[in-house]
Image 1 (cartoon, rainbow, N blue to C red):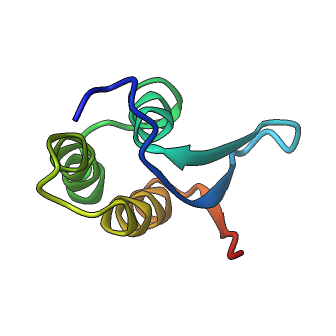
Image 2 (image 1 turned 90 degrees about the horizontal axis):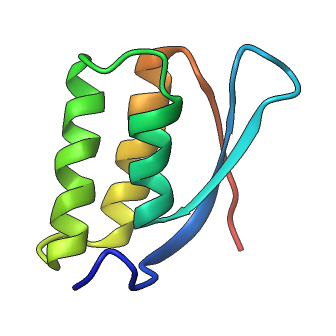
Length: 87
């Protein structure tokens, strides 16, 4: 699996402390970007687990749904509101 291959999951909307700052995450590359560029901390247990699962999804050894759940847990750990959108 390549980074530019769309690996999608049901969207998660991240609401940061600034009410005008929202981010919708629905792909593995979007998850990687959100984790590396947008999260306020990068040393939490759930954050690190989400990074690992992100790589595992790209390699094909984990399911996109696992990454979605990991993003929600990492957001909770970082104090970011995560709204799980279901289709």
